[in-house]
Length: 149
Image 1 (cartoon, rainbow, N blue to C red):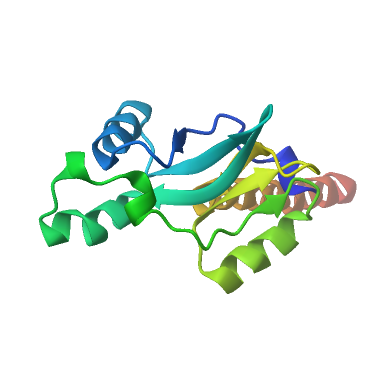
Image 2: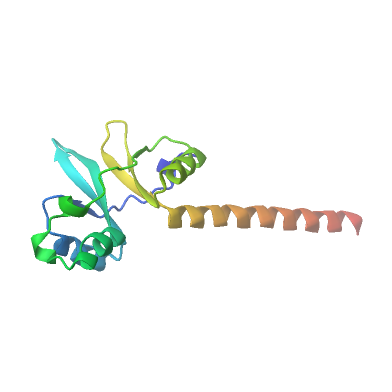
């Protein structure tokens, strides 16, 4: 199972030259806790950073900085974990854990953004897998009971 099969393809993106206030408005209207900061190179949209609600609180609001005067590039995370869409799901989880990130952009072979995966997405997916396993056990028990009757 590759991460590309499960990533969210609807990614909310911003340009690093936009103001933090613009990013906040976008995050609110799209109901997301993070946006992927991108550069456009030719026709490709390349992830270069991430801006989270936590970045905004810790770096801007806690310091009483005017939201209109700060660009996204002033507070975004530059140390970005980017995963290829072909990476195995469990390998992706291990890499996210080792970097301590809750969200990561997913890119194609050319490095262009194709999606995003979050811990919440992964928990939903793994919970679904666990439910399927539990149903398998239950089905097995029913079949055994039918054989003995």
